[in-house]
Amino acid sequence: MRLILLGPPGAGKGTQAARMVETYGIPQLSTGDMLRAAVQAKTPVGLKAKAVMEAGGLVSDDIVIGIVADRIGEPDARNGFILDGFPRTVAQAEALSTMLDSKALALDAVIELEVDQSLLIDRIMTRAAEAKANGQPVRKDDDPDVFKTRLAAYNRDTAVVAPYYRKHGLLRTIDGMQPIDAVTAAIDHVLTKG
Ligand code: AMP
Image 1: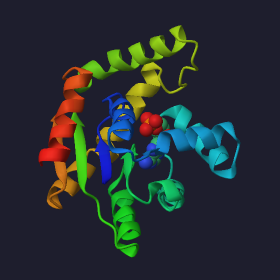
Image 2: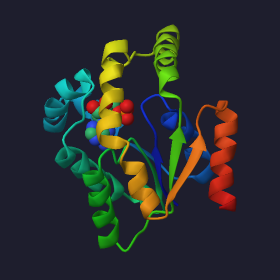
Image 3: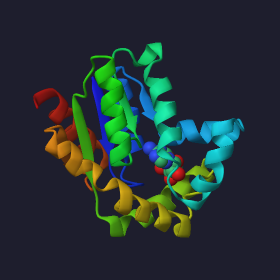
């Protein structure tokens, strides 16, 4: 199964993707995680992406498309994947389509988690507090001001990606404000019963 999870930062994409990995046995391909790993390892991509990510902006399409092209070519992604945080622009969506076409592959569904943006800042602050309490590193971009920039980037560049997939008949929208288990059940329903 080849899937995309769409939704603003804090919508629950990462949480749901982790559950889908278990249920469907396909890997979660999070461009945010890949970029954070590149920043940590100080690779050329990481060095280019670091400042933009810390400011809450979008890393250039070329960089992100390149890492996704490499990643979906890896053996564990052969039977499917869940893209989390990609595509974030229509240019990325078009590049993905070209990549998949060239391998004679297609997307099965694009799942959009619809949320009330006014409540997202609280969610993000909770995520940061929980990470801290569990002794995990707190993401530098989980800060109220940077979060506002991330949300603005979403509304400017990424909100148009859902209509793009709706036009292609792939979009399934789910209420992301439900409790986590209910969102998981709704996703499973869409994927198994159509
Ligand atoms: P995320 O973990 O998905 O919230 O991503 C964290 C940050 O990584 C974003 O705020 C962007 O700076 C960058 N990023 C992740 N995915 C993409 C993408 N598809 N396009 C551009 N930038 C991205």
